[in-house]
Length: 413
Ligand SMILES: Cc1cc2nc3c(=O)[nH]c(=O)nc-3n(C[C@H](O)[C@H](O)[C@H](O)COP(=O)(O)O)c2cc1C
Image (cartoon, rainbow, N blue to C red; front, side):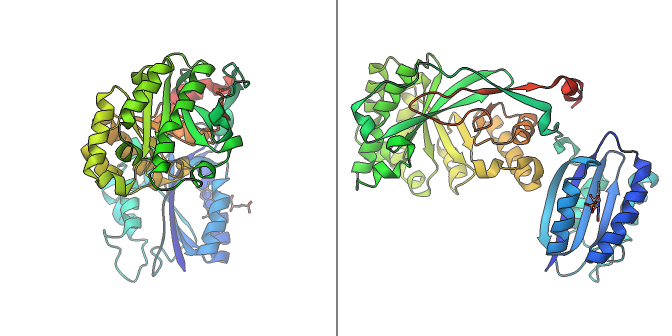
């Protein structure tokens, strides 16, 4: 199938624009050999390239292009299939926007088009090209340093270590993972997650139960989370506990139970965040909205977990606004290279800002993911880049420290 791949990138400081003609003439030979065509635009700082050709060939060239040191911050804007080539005459032509008058530049680019159908403005690839030529969307070009600009330095873990045993621990345990503000070196909260004995899936525990016993067990298990949090010495940090959405609806006096256990463990309701996963069935029930209202009235905070992975959470936001949302890992994985993910996350950030909901990015593994999200305005992060979950205790956190040689570059971003 004929693949169209569109990306943009930032020229590296060490590259002289005059050397680009040489690079393109080499690229032409390679592209012709692989039956790849397209167009390369340059406006003095950014590249915009449209590659068209057989899928395997385009992917192979694109992976070389991605690791090319002559540019950085490579972001795929579009990867789609097309019935015919848009720019079929040239292996790769460089179009330097600086050498053309603004009024004629778009027409000059379009004149290169070879599609048997006239290039129309309904064509998404063409829309991307127009946006680049007209320098729209530039405020969304968030540029980040290379991953190796940062060192990650480990802190001390919270004491006490292990050694405390509760009777429930033979059936289930909890892992604790901090949510951090990396640049102010602050632990914002701990997330306690139910797991099987020894750290396995919570299904090890739930699968032995049936019907409403699952919700009852889900609720009662939180007593151990509170007990462990107190032993760990979380002080006045927030503690996030995850509940199945129906637990609040199906277990009578669920909120009363939580409140009694919170007080019994020297915690206060305002430091407890109840995280629920958006669930289409639960959010449509009237009782569910009532349960959430009672939860908010108790002083506890509400968070929506795995935001972006489900289908009904936008509707949920119209009925009951949480204090926090945790964006799903799948939406965040390699966000620094994905135009579609960037557009969605920027929209979520704007939405949450309008509703005064704080945003947590979960599952951060790569420095680039954290840097991009930080540049987009997210301050709170969770993931193995900073700390992995630890069984029945709080893990050490690794904090980012910029390397001296990148300090100036960081200030200029
Ligand atoms: C902005 C930009 C666009 C490029 N476009 C192409 C291209 O269309 N085709 C190509 O073969 N190489 C292109 N290159 C060069 C490749 O990144 C790479 O240097 C080339 O494929 C040779 O790779 P090799 O030395 O591993 O064989 C481009 C490089 C840059 C920085």
